[in-house]
Length: 71
Image 1 (spheres, one colour):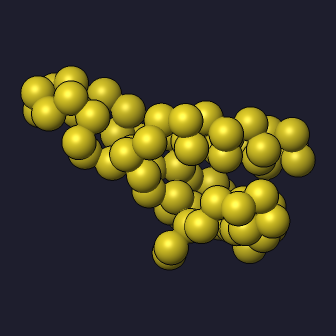
Image 2 (cartoon, helix red, strand yellow; image 1 turned 90 degrees about the vertical axis):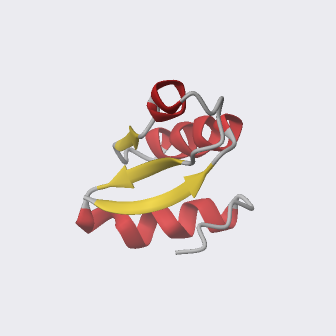
Image 3 (cartoon, rainbow, N blue to C red; image 1 turned 180 degrees about the vertical axis):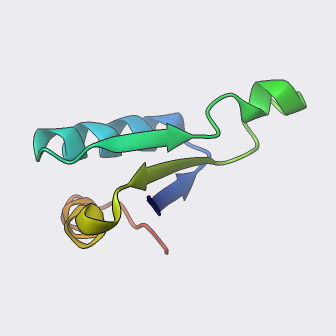
């Protein structure tokens, strides 16, 4: 799996996941509960992962919808 997106904003993660699922690309969220474990209340970023073969298409889908991956 490759990292597609890293952000602190849960709405961006939800929007990106919905866009990818709409195109048939499976996405997996990592570090969802790390903020709670560390006690930092959402300061630690979450990551959105996709399988290697879907990375290029997933980046294009997010870019077309105004989500910069920065990776």
